[in-house]
Length: 207
Image 1 (cartoon, helix red, strand yellow):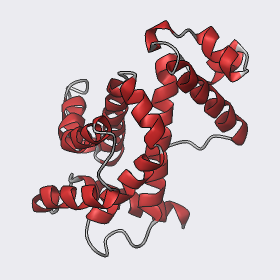
Image 2: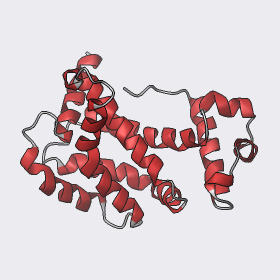
Image 3: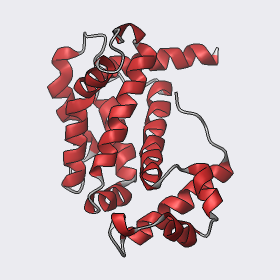
Image 4: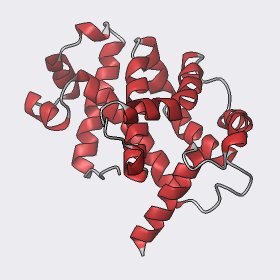
């Protein structure tokens, strides 16, 4: 689902992302140019465009990396369901919390909409890969609404958490989400059930 990137690409992306954060401490996002970012990062413009399409793509790929780490850990762990789905939710928030300073800076720069966009695209990607039967003949509409419905509550809680400077612990949020969603855990499209299916597919791929 998420392609691995080599160390050089990972390093270059990190330099560029950090350069963007540095510049966000000095001027509004809409005043930052690609040339400014490349200069601050110490890379050529060609290097920038080999890794990113535009400024938004820097943030989108950063959030995608967070999701990639979550999916990798969630689908390989053997302990997530011992005490319930709260462990799965807590894992996600633990990974987000490791990125607290960066996420809050993005929030303060009024860039939470890019986190929202990446969440929705992530939901669509999982839905389309695992449940292709949910895609009707109207392929442009149904997957979009389905993904937004599926991940909407989870996303809203996460964005609210970031907007409030991430004060609750991952464990607290995990328990809150478990209590909210435990009534639906028999449904095949319930988020933790999707993660369980991903886990099974990954294990099959390793055999």
